[in-house]
Image (cartoon, rainbow, N blue to C red; front, side):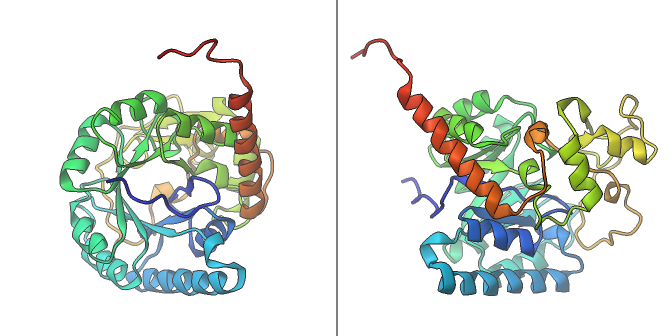
Length: 324
């Protein structure tokens, strides 16, 4: 049986973005009526993660009291389950304590999180980029799939979002979050019409006031277009979508990227000396962002566009005749 839809103003996850999503962004997203998410590796050391989760849970409790429980979206923790993450067990202990309603696992099997999260009634979505990983995640017992498709920022996918969600629906009727180049309400409507339950949007929120991105990063997103992107594994070891001006500013040639380094995703490691601290990622929705603004204003605009898109569909003269 399919889970009850998450209580949202708009079927959107503010996707967890490395070095960008923090407590302020999560709280702003949830207060605006969408899912607010952050990657647990953003909070280092582990004591910082404890502080962040406490801040989020207390902030949302206060928001429910002041603006009404039915207007506040749920929060989500993004957990790295890659074998190199030596902090995984500690992260899971905090997840069990603070009980995020949604946990998205990435860069590994969702299995380590499933027992912990489902025990308190939470949902586990597995971040996947192909059918093989999706099938493994379903077999492992994931409640849903976060399908990262071509056009996504950061660690990206390579499948068309429309083809991907159609293929997923051949064998999975659970909840699906679809991401990849979706940056406006028109894209949200298209994804939902194609079979997704929710949409992953990251790049659209990089320039939000509540983002942890440096001001220069936000401005680069505002100034950039599709032509300013390159996909390369040369920074983290996993293919990711990078802003060319950022790469050039740090001595990297977008047309001649280095070989992929060994993949290492240990949340216990210090940020110091990591080259990915200084290069900036974005997805193919980058060309639709024209200013920095509050999260609430962005969500309001997305909701308006989504309404316009659904009205446009209802107003089209298709199909010409019904088929029984």
